[in-house]
Amino acid sequence: MSTTSTRAREDESLRCFTVPEVDERLAVDTKTVERMILNREIEAFYPRGRGRNRPVRISADELRAVFARTLGE
Image (cartoon, rainbow, N blue to C red):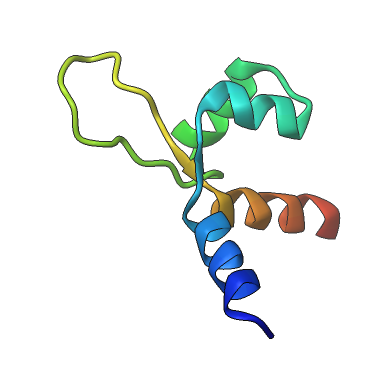
């Protein structure tokens, strides 16, 4: 496998999504994603920053895990 494709995969696994990006990919409402985060059905993190309104992020790996759990039901 080439180094370029390996690096692309690594870069993709490091990618993070906002709640609106996740709700679009899961085809659910923003409130559903927020509830899933509160219920710890989706692992999210809060990047360093100031203020209460800093964006929540969900990793690409976590998003893939959510898809896998959903398809497995």
